[in-house]
Length: 184
Image 1: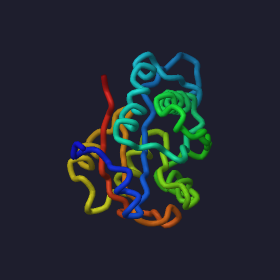
Image 2: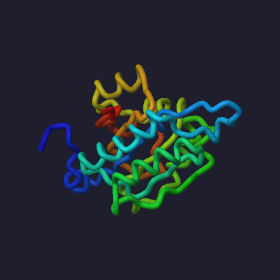
Image 3: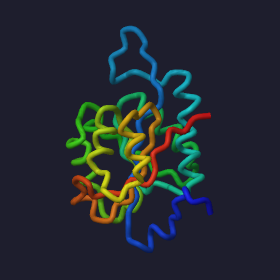
Image 4: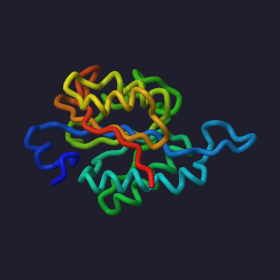
């Protein structure tokens, strides 16, 4: 197994949970369309499935997906779920993830029930980057954290190992294992 592959079996043995934070794919800016209603652009539609393929290739299958209710995040989530196939859970749209900050997004994550072992959250800048910085513990993959901190483009995908309960996740208490931007 390549060294960058997360082995789901070892994750379960250690009791760690997995948090995936995904920024939506590249959106369009149609004239006269409110920000909340902006759809994916052509590039976003082409690239969004790549995030789902990356998750499948790394054996990461969310038990639960929380998604901003904005059009571009919903469309990104749909493409990701199409790649997850039958293992994709029904996403939960949460309007609180649209116009929030890292504290607001974290409070939504904190509500997750403990039986959820792998959670994916689909959202927007700036909170996806701010939350990644807030959660990254000292034992995170340094290259992943630095790369994410410098620039988190559309379709930026962060993966964290979470050792504790969702309700107590707060800051510097999750280990970033990956930061990738799936591209063709």
